[in-house]
Each structure stands twice: as structure tokens, then as C-alpha cells.
Length: 143
Ligand code: ATP
Image (cartoon, rainbow, N blue to C red; front, side):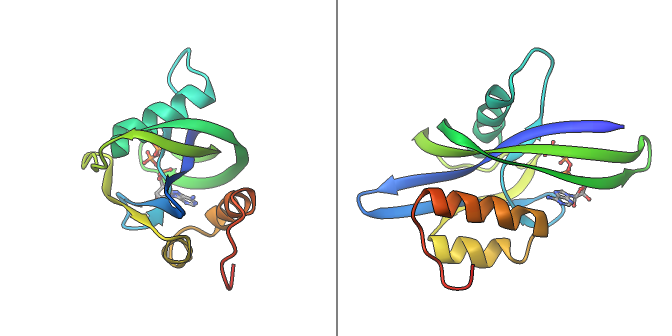
């Protein structure tokens, strides 16, 4: 079966400082906030809703970044073909707070620290981060 989710690389600006949001998902991996598309919703609506639900942050879409694909096995549904649409999202308001039913934790990181974290997560997120950093003119050593 096929499953479609949307989410984002969320950044915030604090004067000259830029911070990147990283979550730890339910599987103990560093990743990006995302969630499943609901009936009647656009991918942009899904991404912003899931970011808000999982992390407490209201954001605005800057641009689409990438669509990634992976497969996983679900004991009930069998093989799941997953498609995740990622957007670059700027945080606008809200208070950072992890929704513990969906994720283990969430925090803001400097770009360098965010990249280090994500390198311990899923490989297919790397190019999403690279695109976001390019768009934001962020240079990180070994990216
Ligand atoms: P959603 O956040 O879209 O509602 P979910 O929490 O139900 O999704 P996934 O995050 O897709 O489900 O996780 C299902 C399985 O896929 C888990 O084993 C997880 O470790 C794995 N997984 C999650 N993200 C990725 C990824 N980017 N690449 C490969 N495997 C992943």
C-alpha cells in the first residue's frame, strides 16, 4: 500500500542567528517533523498542520524542497511504500513543545549541530537538508 506524508525543515531567525528544528521520532532517530495527509487537505496544509501538532510551532511555507521515498513493513498492512513531501518552512509563532504521542523530542540547533544530528538519522533526509541550507545560504563544513 501507499502512504503519503508531508512535513518540513523548519528554521527560525533570531537577529543574525539561524536555528534549525530537529525532532527525535518514535523510533529514536533524528529526523524532521511530518505526518500523513488527511482527506481534502493539500500537501502544504498537511505540512503546516503536522509541524504545529508535533512541535507547537506555526510556520509559513517558503518553498517545496524534495519528495523522498522509502519502504517499511507494517505487521497489519504489509509492505508500505511511503512518499514524503518536504517544504522549507519559516517559524513564525508558537512555543516549542513535543507532542509525545507522535515524537520523542524536539529542539532548535545551530546549522552545524543540526547537520551532525541528522547524519545519525535517515540517509534520505540528507539531500533535503542540503537543499534547505543552499536556499538559506548556510555553509556547513562537511555537508
Ligand atoms: P508519519 O510521521 O508520516 O505519520 P509514521 O510515524 O506512522 O509516519 P514513519 O515515520 O514513516 O511512520 O515510520 C515508519 C517506519 O519507517 C519506521 O520503522 C521508521 O523508522 C521508518 N522511517 C521513518 N522515516 C524514514 C526515512 N526517512 N527513511 C527510511 N525509513 C524511515
